[in-house]
Length: 291
Image 1: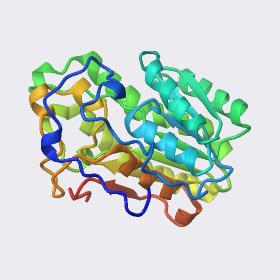
Image 2 (image 1 turned 45 degrees about the vertical axis):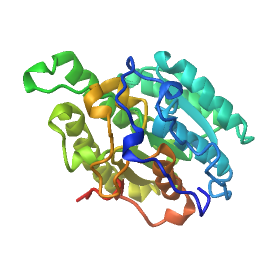
Image 3 (image 1 turned 120 degrees about the vertical axis):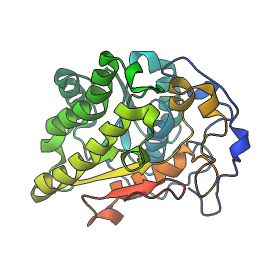
Image 4 (image 1 turned 90 degrees about the vertical axis):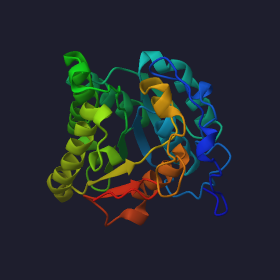
């Protein structure tokens, strides 16, 4: 991000709105900032090869775009329903001059994650940075409203998938690679309408701490980024309209964050600047505490 770039989005600039799941960046009002114009690359990831799950939109798009602007080639995993957004992300990455490969997959099985790992290694010749960002959430007002299949989908997408993907790519990441996981402020301050989602994010924090201990001797750093309320398609696609209106206004900074503001944390953790950082969770929450 350029040194003089800040978000000026006010809380009242997020009107009530709703999208069909999984949502689309193109339909967000106001548009989100993924770094298309606001990010200035400095070669901090030059020559690195990255995998970004859920890289079609929101935080994942911003991570893919900023990584490319910093010199990385990228494999982006996305759901079939997200192909339009994924193609736009690929266009933005190519505009930086870096290589991008799209991989369509539902990462709720070990086999799907192993296939993604093979695709990435074959396409890029190896992997240096793994970003486990894909997530599923759907809000309900009462405990009784959470269906069993949603609980299974949320945990399979948010927890099982990252576990299997790290397992598959760990040999590629040895001696200098890193794993980055998107957790959430929900792990620390859970919302009752996101019971299952919040639980998965707490599980991911624990997984990151354990993986850092397990993979550290192999030269692999493992860290997490915990976003607060970030303006992405996941919000209007999975939350009631009344909760979307004024989204993010309850933070100390009084506004929602932009995807590029979260991507900045991922760039730091993926870079050599974070060479002695492992086993930590970096909060990007607008002032909400992560402890």
